[in-house]
Length: 247
Image (cartoon, rainbow, N blue to C red; front, side, top):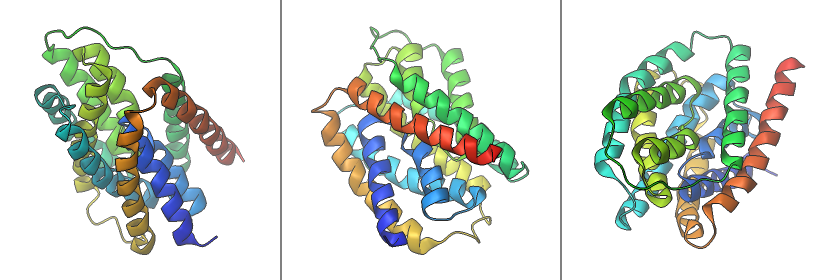
């Protein structure tokens, strides 16, 4: 199978996940870019941010059109993550690749565990700025450092901290992911010399199309069921990356 075909398949899976679950796709994008397409970890995390930023922005439009985005709450979350995302993105280039891979694997395991648990909505509550800012800053740092959108953390945070219904949390998380990804990319400006745009382009295109399909899928299938399937796949990927680091 050619590299472009692999990029198209991987992109479709990443987009489908982002569109359906509001996050998680970026955690798959980095290992896909590394192990399927031969990117270094540094190039993979930067390319992942490009792919996730474009795909999340597209999926955000689809969810916003259906009224599933809490703009005020999401903007507060996103704004809190801009500076941490930028600073962590700048610092990531100074960390040894083995340490970054280990950290990424740990985050992937955390995402798998979190997504294997049922998600429940809470009644709407008044926004607590302190909690929202703290959670948003943490998500921004994860995005900048590891090149992941952080949606797998954003969705439960938006549900538990802000009391958003599950579908609104999924849509709102895409706003947070988009803003954080662009902030992290700004910190990595000039570090894209090793990027293969001939593969990133098809990957991104397939991800954007997949996000639209994911949006439709989320309206037909239980979000909790989708999360469990994704959690199993992600756990396998995380274990593979850990073994690769140890070996």
